[in-house]
Image 1: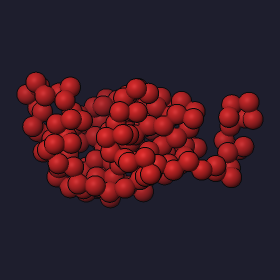
Image 2 (image 1 turned 30 degrees about the horizontal axis):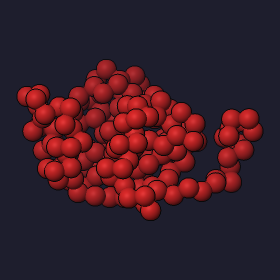
Image 3 (image 1 turned 90 degrees about the vertical axis):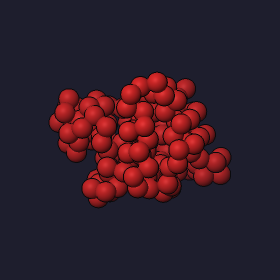
Length: 153
């Protein structure tokens, strides 16, 4: 099964949305394979957001992500990356559809509650950036046969 990274950003932490957001992924049927609270620093954010380093808002994004601790999570499931992206919604909360996490809880481009990996390749890199191998767990959920048909898993 596929794995993907989700970061519950300072905007989720400060607004008390950790349970709300996490429950959306759980209710969908994704499996939580790893979770921890960390304080992001300049070094890890320079690496994580390297693709934005030449943008005028780069420092603003980093400052926002260091405003409080964050929760990093590894979610697992068939097509986990695309499933999570669909649940999260468009980056800009003002444009995200109602019913998505950003559509329901964000009205900002930057303070948009979560980061989610945008591809399988990115998820692999991002998960290794935030988790040690022993922090991601493989286990079989008892309800697996009620989440997928037997020919899907």
